[in-house]
Length: 188
Image (cartoon, rainbow, N blue to C red; front, side):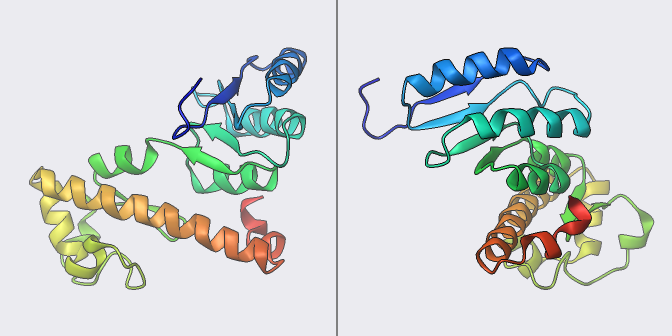
């Protein structure tokens, strides 16, 4: 790997078997890569199993290099993974939910097809700085979703990505302020 503008991460595999993950992690760490990913844990496994795999695998990876959990992106999964030492995530959840008319709002999922949003002229989240929340009401978004207008799905996807960025920023602030365990106890 010669490109200086890219970081090559090794991906620790091994299924649900701690011994295989340990071997894979050791071999990858010996390569002294810029970062390490934990793979193979977001393809339908229950949350408890994901937690167990991350708790076994993350401590095997260097603390001074980024640790990336592939394909995990629910509020609960992110908090638990961060508590186990994970630094990075990627996931289709915010955009997939947006494409299905669902908004992520302060730890909850709101289905905009629900009738209660039809005459609600407030933003999804008044504290959210995203383009969707600053310019459109819940009622209008609900209309777009019911009408199957692609703009609705795009706006919800934009909002959902912003929501998860803001959520991880709150986690970061809590960690820096030594409040992580108390502020996010309900997710642990």
